Length: 117
Image (cartoon, rainbow, N blue to C red; front, top):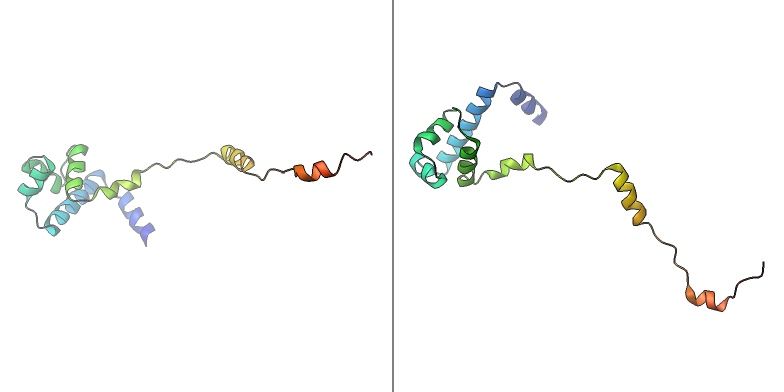
């Protein structure tokens, strides 16, 4: 089901995606029982800029971030997190580094002098 949802979003136009984002912001604002004036003030933007965002008009990315921060929805950006990946060669090197090293028992070596063969 999630795959279908992703495919549907990928098929949307840029304008349709911006409209979806605006609808999301508006719904979250209403769910938190905030007016446009209140949310705009808390986000440090004008009410007219917030109105543009909610209507799906183009706004700056920083505006979206400021609004999502106030709405406590910055977790959305976790999808953009880039994790550190180890190359296969580095992985093999790390594995070899952690392989068990042969330990010589020094007590046994002292008891058994070198054989003569």
